[in-house]
Length: 130
Image 1 (cartoon, rainbow, N blue to C red):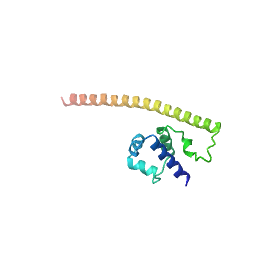
Image 2: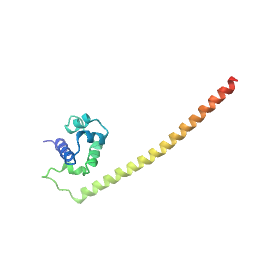
Image 3: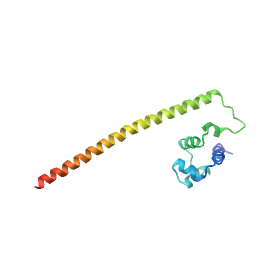
Image 4: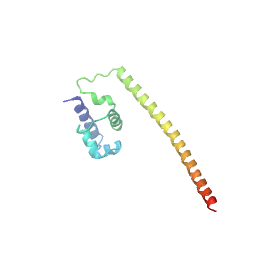
C-alpha cells in the first residue's frame, strides 16, 4: 500500500474513532461532503494545509498518520521540530489575524468616507439645481 493510501486509511480510522461522519468532517473543513469523501478515497488531492487541518480536527499529531507500526521511532528532535512548526504556524496565524483586523478597520474607514462624500455630492447637486 502506498504512503498516501496508508495516511488516508489512518485518517479514516481516526475519523471513525472520534465518531465523525463524512458530513461532519466536511463541515469542519468548509467543503462539501462529496469533496471530503473524494479526499478520503484518494480521488482528489490532499493538500498539506488540509492535512494539517484534519489532524487538528481529529486532535492528532500530523506525524501520527505516518506511523505504520513497524517504523514508529520518533525521537525528541522530531517532537521538537513539530513543536517549532506549530509555533511558527501559530505566529503566522496571529500575524494574519492582526493584519486582517487592521485592514478591516481601514476598509470601514474608507467606506465611511465614501458614504460622506456621496452625501456631500448629493447635497451639492441639489444646490446646483436650485
